Amino acid sequence: MKSINLLRALGGVDDKYIEEAQGIPVAKATPKRVNILRFAPVAACLAAALIAASVFLPQWGQDTPGETDINIITSGDPQSGNSVGTLVADPSDPNSVARPLYPLTFNAGTSMTRTDRSWAFGVFDYDLTDEQLDTVFPNFHAMNPDMTLAANAFYGKDGTLLSVTAVETLAAGRMDTPVMYSYYTRTEIQLGQGEIIEDCIVIYEDAPQVSEVYGVFVTAYMIEFDSADGVVFFQAEFTVDNIAYRVKMYDNREDGQKRMTQMVNTLIGNGPADLAVLADPVIPEMRYDRLTLDEARLDPDFGTFLPQGIPAGFTFESAYRVITTRENSLSAHWSNGYSNLEFRAAHVTDYHRGLIVSSGDRDKYDMSLYSIPLFDSVPSELREVVNNPVFLAEELTLDMVQARAFWVDERGDVSGWRMNFGVLYGDAVLTVSGRGVSPEQVWELLSELK
Image (tube, rainbow, N blue to C red):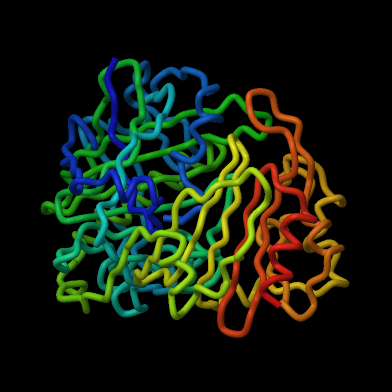
């Protein structure tokens, strides 16, 4: 049994991972043993439970090495690097010269599993500007005029560039609006200076076949999910002039192979990324402190958002003060067996403002209108706000809190109420998450803050 290490740049860091982190694990990307934000909202490893049901596929191109199973390719040998068609460098330019198009062999993966590794504390990231995107992905938009990218650059605490993660988005520069295919981010591209952070492992049965594109060795594979919508996960990995690339996609089998082949040819044909444009970042203030409850309540920015009382039976677990390029927050956690409660106060962002709902917007927050799983019952245009509504503090009522709660009977876990919502207080937003806590108990705690 062999494995391929997926590397993923994560924008957020779980508390438990930061405490355990001792360094930044890396794995080199090579042609023969190929070594992955947000985000997520949205990634391969977050779907591990679904992937466990995936089925084994024959290796595409192994039995008929002169052919592939996608429309744009009709002949050619992926292992020899023989071209099978052409790819226009700039479709909008009538004088643009066509380039050879090389096929890929898609090896069969069987499953995927998440590792327990994450970023060490001190890693920070910045959004790439349009100019930086054009430099890191030269001529990309011209060859993909219907695709909009947004990207983050991730750095070590000393300012060393670790990796870049780009996703296909609905809006330019918005990493939080990825184009989705079924449950997943449709397209993601990662690259780094020879190395990328390790995040999860993909398993395959046989030694992978390696394709050749413009003299570059490429390992590509696919995992077909055992699902009604026919979603397939694709990944290709290669290195150009010591720049390691990883391309991930979710699509149906035919369109995914076509898109991946075009994408890999585009990235390699356009030449290696110039990462020098991302050098010498401003190193931001960073903070990650574990606090006592008394220390947390004395925090000058957010301490007043922590309740003085707490539901009977609950005990204080932890509190954290976090400052990164993405977050400025104070959180506190209480538990009672499997039940738990979290209050997290943070500076409000445009993202939070986009989720504000009023009492009359029942379709945007009332959980009684929908069934679990929400993905199947909530309209796609409402999913984000239904999952994370933000109420104005001056409008919040017990009825609205009750509308956010839903009852779960779960074997092996605590049965009871579940809820999640935000409350906007001026320039701060308080996010409340509860399991095994009644809406009346949460309302009583919030009433202290008014």
